[in-house]
Every structure is written in C-alpha cells, then in structure tokens.
Image (cartoon, rainbow, N blue to C red; front, side, top):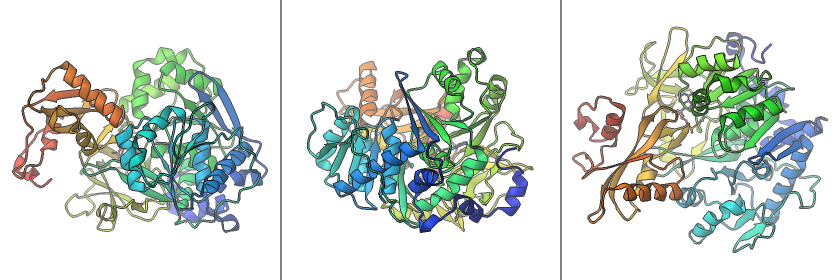
Length: 565
Ligand code: PRX
C-alpha cells in the first residue's frame, strides 16, 4: 500500500495540520528544520539507524547514522557560533557532494543561520554576484574550490570566514580557518536555535530573464510541505534506501536530498561522482536502492546507453521512480517501464515553490508526457496571460498557484519589486505555459520567458551576455537556448566582434572557455554564431526572442509587438 493511498480521497480531506501532527510539530515549541531532520529521530530512539550512505568518485564509502549526523551537525553549528556568525546571517556552502556539505547545511540551520548552497562548479563571476547580493558572512569550502574564493575576496567585505574542511597540510590565507569534523572535539549537545515557522532558512539563487540571479528565500516552516510531499509523492517508507541524484546547489538537492528524506527518517544514498550509466547502475545495485528521484536529461542519457546495460545489473530492489526539472518526454516514461519494469513519475515545481506542486502519484495512472495533478492542499490552475483568469480546459495558458502552502518562498533577497510581480489576481504565476486535459492532468508547453533550461538547470541569458561582453573580442552578444536531444536545451551565443578580431575557431574556443571559467560549464555556449550585428528593437534592445525562435524553427511573427519585451 502506498503512503498516499487514494489521491482523490487525500485531495478531499487534506489539511496541512495533519502533516504537522505527524511531525509532532512544533515539539517543545521548536520549529527548527535541523532538529526534525536529525535530533528528533535520536530522541525517539532511532539514532542508530543509517541516515547516509556516501560514496566518492573513487568508490570510497562512508556511512553515518542519525546519531553521527547529530554529532557532526552539532560540531558545525558550534563552530559557526564560535566564529561569531549570528542567527539570520548567510552561510554559503560551496563544495562537491561530500559529507561535510550535508553536515554544514543542517549545522547552519541548527544555529539559526540562513544557508546558501552554491553549485561547486560555479566560477568567480557566478560566485561573486550571489555572495555580494546576499552579503554572505561565512563560506564553507574545500582546497579544490577555495582558490576561486580567494580571487574575489577583496571585493567581498562581508565575507569574514572561510572554513576549509580538508585543510590538512594546506597553507591557509586571509580570513581562512581549518575545520575538520572528524578531528574537532565532539559536541554532545547543541540545542537547536529557537525559530518560528516564518524564520528564514535557505536562500537558493535562481536565474531570470533580466537582471542578476534572484535569491529565493525560504523559511523553517517549509519543512511541513517538504515532509509530506516526500512521503506521498516519493512514497518513502521506513525500510527504503532512497537516492536523489540532485546536487544541493539546486533546490531539488536540498528539499528532496536533505530535508524531505531525513525529516521522514529515511536512509539515503549520495554519490559524489559525475554521470555514468554503468556507474549509476552499479551504485544502485550495490546499495539495493529502492526509490530513485532523478532528472530527464539523465534518463535520456541512460536511454541512449540501452536496455541491455540495465539488464546486466540487478536492479530488482527498485520500487518507485520519479523525475523533475524539465519536461519528461513520453518516450522516456515508456522506456523506463521496459528497462526497469517501472515508470518514471514526473513532478513539476520550482525553486520558488520549495516543494513539488504538480505530480504523478503512486497508484494514479501515469499519462506519459504529462506532469500529473496538483498536490493535495495546493490549488493550481492555468490562467490567461492577459487577465490572469482561468482559461477553458485544453487551452494553453500560464501555470498559476494559490499562495499559502508552507514552502512557498517568502521573498527574493533585496528584490521586492520582482517578487511582487510574480503575484497577479490572487495567483502566484510560475512563468511556464501548460494546459489541463479533461481528466485534470497538466501538460507542459514551454517557459514563458527566455531563461535557458539546460539539463534541468536554469541559466539566465543576461548573466551569460554580461560575461560575454567582458571578453576582449566581444562587441555585443545575445544568449539563447537551442534545442538539444539530451539536455533539452543548450546555450547558443550570437556574437558581434570588435574590429580587429577574426570570427574563427580560436576566437570561438577562447570565448567558450572564458564563460566556462567565469560562470560555469552549464552556462558555456555549446555554439557561437558570429554575426555582423544583432537584431534590435527601435529603442535599441536586442531581439533575443527572435534569435531564439529561429533556433526552434518557430514563427517570429510581427516583431513590432516585441518592442517593449
Ligand atoms: O520551467 C520549469 C522547469 O524548471 C523550472 C524550475 O526550475 P528550478 O527553479 O531550477 O527548479 C527545478 C527543480 C524543481 C520550471 O519553472 N521544470 C521543472 N520541473 C519540470 C519543468 N518543466 C517541465 N516539466 C517538469 N516536470
């Protein structure tokens, strides 16, 4: 029997209070996420249960019980406090998927800090925009990544503490301190900082079409949504071995790679290694994974490597599969049934929503290619882009949600105006286009802006364009998404060169590498088209949408209507 049982029944009788009751929320008046993910299990006699099975890229393995998690998160919390980090100050986590990432995330929350996880492949520019905006006070990192921080340090007066977690034999510099949780004296008790459901918890940066990346601010009360969606959609049960493939630099890796599974007291797997079909199958076979949450790009890559490779492994432990981040094509759902005997269940949500909002559920028939139905307790709709009134069934409009579920973001950091613009006619507007069919299933059509979704990761064209013009050869540029079989979209840049520079392979390579280093490998254009000049509106704005339409073979239409876009 699945946790959710009947979707329709749950929808009828839903009350968030029920999730709170299950969590015993707020036990002793405490709302701190870290306490629910860790200490609560220990206090209830479940401290000996395995919380984390971690494997590094060379195959080394580490295991941690909930009691270990308690001690290690205490150690990080105490260290942050010793350094003078105050509750409410931002603590950035900037490292690969090593155990310290998970300990410092919960340790930061435990002492009342706002944790700001950033993807470890980010380059200097990506890093500085986010650290500057958040006025981040401390950063936790490793030898491998600290060099990037050193190069921008003089521009970050607020960044007072750099914790290097593997500093053995490493010469530390200005503002750096070593912290090794294995060598630090054990901290037996660290009472979780008292917070309310509205106290800020996690700050996740996400990209928009214009302007700098926006910091979506979450609160401790988000736990309620993350707990119950994990339980009902991912169907996590006490004996499950769960694997979420996402990096905590992105929201999936925190909502469903930390908070959701651990608040459910579940054992989870982490693999700190890049993608490889055989490697992934071996990992799941070795640890007898039962529930697997991944993304369409990975599924398409697995599909490319064929069913035979799947059959060489014993994946009979798998009982439930789910996916998020980009459209999950119908073929991938059909293939997964053939390859694993199970369908991937698509889920739709955003950094801003904090939890899954449209989902396919255990027990509810999957319509391959559809994102499923609204989570019980969340009122969703598809609205007209002009008046934000619900459209007729089958008509394409904008996905909209009624505000009020516990994990909804509470602000864009320092950006009230953009936050307020997301709300129209009593709805939160997601910025994606979709339609609803006669059975109430949602079908994704596309984004309503120019943000590029590459392999499930959003990249802002403005960020890429701002970096491009810093290259010595670039006069002006536009970045758009172009279709890609595996990643759905990849970045393509249109570049007009300055006089004296040649549009050749060397220039192209030099620009690509420049972006990879400055921003990240994801933001690096896979193709650069050199053009004499870029199409513009009469007021001189680059017609990015026209370039994008060309890539997708879409009608450009009347460009005069794009004047004010
Ligand atoms: O465009 C939608 C796409 O990813 C966006 C949210 O990205 P982000 O905030 O980085 O969060 C990703 C993980 C929750 C959405 O606005 N997206 C997400 N899930 C789906 C999707 N597009 C189609 N189908 C999905 N299941």
